[in-house]
Structure formats: structure tokens, C-alpha cells
Amino acid sequence: MDLLADVRRVFNRRGFSGTSFRAVAAELGISPGHLHYHFRTKEAALEALFQELVDATEGMFAAGVEPASLPKAWFRLQHEYVFFFRELPAILLQHPNLRRRYREIAEKRVGQFWQLLVQLSRAGLVVAEPERDFFERFALLLWHQCNSALSLLPPEESALAQAESMLYTLLLPLLTARGRALLRNAGLA
Image (cartoon, rainbow, N blue to C red; front, side, top):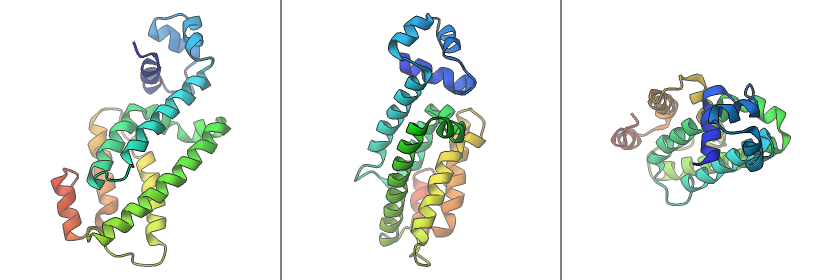
């Protein structure tokens, strides 16, 4: 039994903010004391889940990762932690430590998106930067889209394809013919 994964599934079903730790224990069929033994507080469980999410994303953005595989992998991971993304503003507002860590990670990821856009442009998959700092601003837009797409969609697995389609729509004006072909071949278009 992976207790943290079980807690994540409860938060995904019921939400984080509106679910007490006692309710989590009851839904898992364990005593509140058993849950508190593993996670001192609900916030400690949230921090452990956040760290798990951060660790999972590190591999996605590692050097050498195929860019066309990122959206599918990201939205799949986001679906596994959907409670976090649905409640992101409230969670970050109520948990200053997580807010600080999230901002650091967001800054890093936006930088990685920017570098990816530059690389894709050099490879002829996206158009040349139309104006100064455009890719930097677009990277920030991509980050926001990627972090909010599933929060607007139904919890079903079919939402993953919808999120990918929304991302493709956002990217479409930047893609060259080669870039569109690559995404079609990857099943994203």
C-alpha cells in the first residue's frame, strides 16, 4: 500500500481544501492516528505530494527529452495530481512555503520553455522570434496554459486529449510546416 498515492487519490476526488485529514483517514479505512504517524498534518502530506510532483517533472525537462513528448507526459502527470492544479491559487495563497517553492520552479520551467522555443526555432520547427522577447513572453503563456488546462476540464481521462488539443491550438500560429508535421506524427494535432 502506497499511503501517499492513496492520499493523493482522495484529494483528487474530494479536493484538498474541503477535505479534513480525518475524512481522508476515514475514506482510506485507517485510523486518524495511523495517518498522522506518516504525515504529521494535512499540510505535511501536501508538501510530500508537491515534492513528488516536482521530482517527476525534473525528468521530463531533462536534456535530451523529445519536445513532442512533453505535452502528453505533462498532462498525464497533471491528471495524477489534478487536485493541486484545480486548487492552485488557493493552495499557494494558504501555504507560503509552497508558494515560494512553486515560484522558483515556475521560473525554472518558464526558462526551460523559452530555451525549448529557441531550439525549436533553430531547428526550423517554429517560426523565428517575431519580435524581441516574444519567446520569453510566450513561454510564460505556455506555462500558465499548461498549469490551468486540466483545471477547466472534466476529471475524466478524455480531458488529457482536450488539454493537448488546446495547447496545439495555442502553438499553431508559431509552428512551421515541419513543426505541424512533427506534432501530427506525435499524435498531438
